[in-house]
Image 1 (cartoon, rainbow, N blue to C red):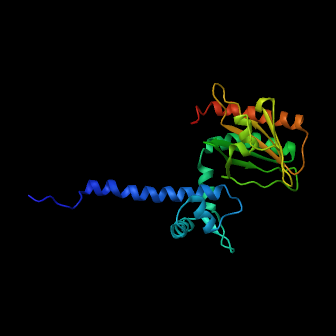
Image 2 (cartoon, one colour):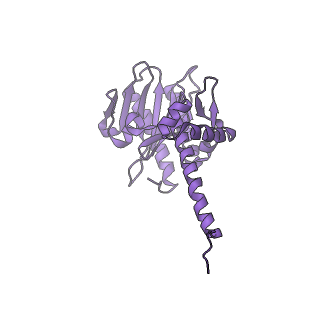
Length: 238
């Protein structure tokens, strides 16, 4: 009896997701690349960064744009779309909700932007931004922004190390400051996680340097409140 060359339905169902998974993987890598580029990326730069052919990048970007995941500027650059903001708002909404009030107090007390950031692998990801209601202007930031942890004050506060000379680590990482040349000043503090390594940090961003000791005390107070409330959520995945 001749063997049929036609694959069974089970084999076809097993093979199909493999191709789909590769496509999904490329799409996710595109989104991650854009998350790390607040000013956006053109197709050529994006295809080089993600290491895919430009034609494939165009096709995936078209799909992502139809779903609102990315948007294209007039000059051709692509940025994250508003649908990403909606999805990021749904992720760990419990953490965001318990951190909202302490960050609001911190932002108003310092008259500066306060943000909540989470360590994800080797990157820091912004989960929540609270702008001060006590100041006419504030430093802008972006929910979902992903940056290498060692390049950020929040990451340095969690890891105890940094690759930037303008980031200063105080008291073993309990407070980290950064005075960017031509950019904002910031102070970060880890959110306590009893019995485990902290994975979340809060950060204050201001146009001008603030008094370190006073700002650190306010940040530590906010971090303590968030840490206490997070205890009720149970362990976070590292």
